[in-house]
Length: 421
Image 1 (tube, rainbow, N blue to C red):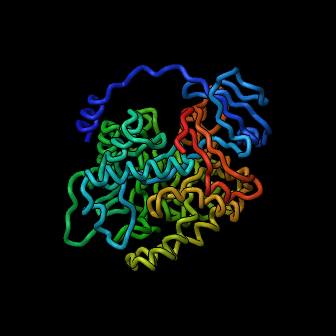
Image 2 (tube, rainbow, N blue to C red):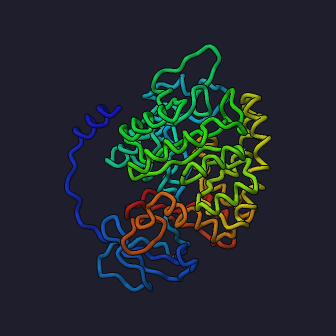
Image 3 (cartoon, helix red, strand yellow):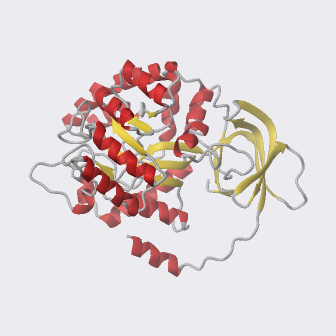
């Protein structure tokens, strides 16, 4: 995959970028950092960054103007839990195996464009069954070969053999690139973690408990113990990065938090002790509380495995109640949807759910902007429309502070000062 991208890049003549100034006229501008809504704003963009934000005034004659005066403007949205570089879930557990690496890469490019057009301009891609497909997609986007959001990627799952990070079908052995992160001991975890960083990953993804959408694993079971988590976290710190843990079960969540992870994905069966521990340690929760409804409805229509549907039923409402408790307790929460379980591009559907289960509309927007940016360590790059930040913006009709669902239908998207929708 890497040599293919290098060859493609060599065929494209890249001319030096010309200086470019754009003036965006925002009817209303939401600043999630201050929780303010500012009217009639001028946003001056120089190349790919915001240079100035102030009251609207007439730009110089002949200036390039983006007229969003009838819209509410927000920073580009951030989804902390996506799977762009994968095939998604279906009635066939073997679909990732049956889909060739080339076809998987092309699907990833399509998912990336769909996600960008939906207003999610930065994503954290938290794993793919075929190792480093996400790295290739990220690099292709960064080189301008395909359009898509800014990506931070996990490279491969660190998972026990036959665990929640693998395609498990009785009597079959998956190819090496689908078992890249297999590890059973702390020493093996350290080795695989080093290899994953060497392959270009930005952070580590640990499968600490069983999974809902995987054959032969149970969400409540610990699959990587605290010592294994600590081993991965130590490697991540040495690479100036962090580890996040897929963890559904209450005991697995607490073991991962004690092991030093930066965030917990799903947290479906979190208990009061786990909520208190997450708050005390400053660990983020990234809880995908929308997609349980999608799996229950569409999974049954499409004939997904009964094991998937049973585990989804057992975790969906518990996860939502845990989310409500975590919000009330003041735990750090970032916006993540598990896009790929449901069709890409519908990422904003979760906003209505997190408001229903305890967040204010402003808190919901903050979870997908300034809070998410802080989790990934990009708080000085994305998540705000402010001088020095990337000129990543979305425009919507109406007011998301009175109707959060307007975010499901963005009218326009700008990435780095360039309109992409």
